[in-house]
Length: 415
Length: 201
Image 1 (cartoon, rainbow over the protein chains, first blue to last red):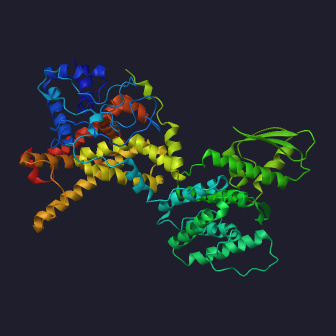
Image 2: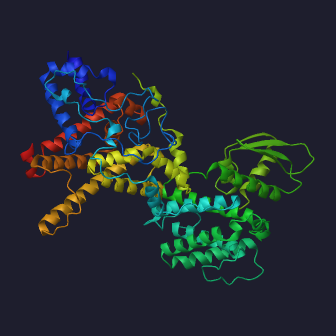
Image 3: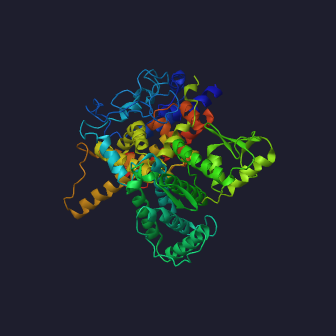
């Protein structure tokens, strides 16, 4: 007896919530009829759920869902774990949640479907199933169209603008950094990389994007630096970054962000971001003569890398760019790596998991080694965020040839 | 029966959806809304009793998901639960501020009755409504582990076993958390802070 009593006792809350399995539903009322202690407790819990249910409204029978309510596309376009019943109980016009599709137990059915002659609580099987919850209330208040709700949401953060394929990863990376901005508030001086804090890292991006911005005809947003004409591109690059960071540290972080965002929006608005032909023109930037289209990818890469840096500093996981973008970055990185290795390096077959293969190094010679890397890891390596000695990779063949490739990749100092 | 059909506990789908939200893909927002808009609204309606208010809450919740995607962390739970919790919190805030306005309006005797009272509202109804708000306030303050089980069982209509699978916890734990949670709520009622409420008890 005690075991049954204890079992039921433990089930009472689930019962009151209507969250028992169909198989268990009978045991509760049976026991309640015999056990006064449990019946009292059951009544108390049941009353609590009744009040949670907001009885002020309860008497109104659930009306038909408003006609023409928001169209609900595929029942489970997104997450829904498995074939459970619909992801959104009551989300759709369907008055019942996910009709037949899932064998899953019906939602919150009455706890003790009236079978219990118990004191009372079981009988008052009340709570409307979750599916009905969506449409309580007197038939009033039309459901707001999904388009309105989504439009209101989008006003809070710009979506990626539509641009040509070569600029899409940059547009996404800019959106990605924007998504992180609210998390930076109040934490601008958190150290990130080098000797930069969060504020300086955004300032660096402002400086780094400026070179392409100038090439496409946008005016610099920070007073020019006075640099000797004979500086190497790396020195000029570093001096400019240092100047911009110093300048921005004298301003509010929000001002730096606003300038970075305005410049990024400018880069995504110019014809070079929309017209592949105009983006085919080769220009020299960061010591590399590449089509403008590729420089857009370079901007995407750097923006993503530094967003990732900031995320780490703030204890947040920045997701890798969408797969398609990642591959655009990989292809560019392979091309740059090929140039850096030069035509005489011992040939290595590089394969990036789930995608393509390239032979890097000397042509017409037998391949000395094979090297396989994950796309994400490869990007981190090229971005200088993985150590060539410890990057997760599968290598066979001539170890020296492999090491040469890995070290060259890591030393691209691409960003 | 074990509801093994729910076994895919944290589907990568949440992670992927989050990634797309982060990178500014509007279609991800539309998908999240199609999947969870109903749940969010249902939670809000349950608390506010006002379909109009529920629309406002839904709008706020999805605006937050879009403008601050990093507030959701897939390592800490499902998007479904996160949205449900957020909707609940917002709905409780909404009702509280309505109550304040109503009291102010009464005090001022200024006829600022922007909020339509649902139904005629005899005393009992008013008391029930206040007790309901009290309960929902207490629910919003439960420890996160208890709250998420309650949300799955109560708002999303899961059995405690399904909830256990979804959360990746033992069934016994789900049962215990529901029990602890509901008892805490029941005690809130037994010991209401506002003496005016005792009449109704």
